[in-house]
Image 1 (tube, rainbow, N blue to C red):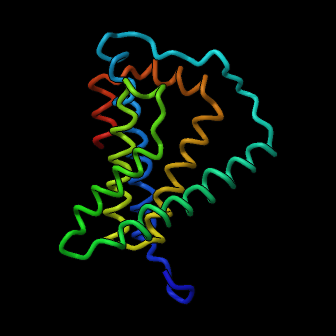
Image 2: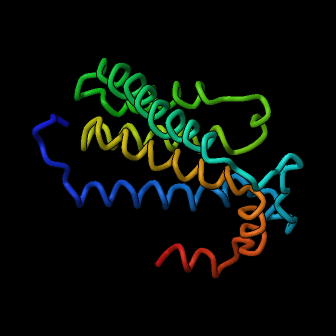
Image 3: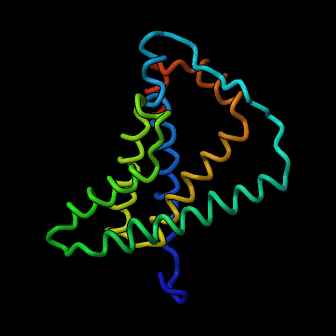
Length: 176
């Protein structure tokens, strides 16, 4: 987006909604084993619901702004731009694989998290192709902001997930 261009409010709201829905749908997938076995979602031992303002501001600046900007510039603007229009879907797949590999950790090797990050990368790539870099950065920032808000209140969030239990009613509410 150029400085003198106006932001399309409809696109802006759509991107924020996509980030929210992706985050809402992500949690049942990440916790699928607990859900299928009807187990409680484990609350991390090192959970501390106290969060000071200064660390939050630093985390916000780092996670929501810098990380989103740098990752979108690298994985979408630089890598995806190497592919021409005929091969753009292959480029989307390739940049999403690299994006997922970049976020890979061995503690998530048996979880669905790498697959979710791949699909997030794919959505970010498609948004980049269709709407441009600004909107892929916006989606990434919204997603990271939601992650940060959840990370601040892990205990309360785990309790909420346990209460929802991702039953049929949960999916009906999400479907609305």
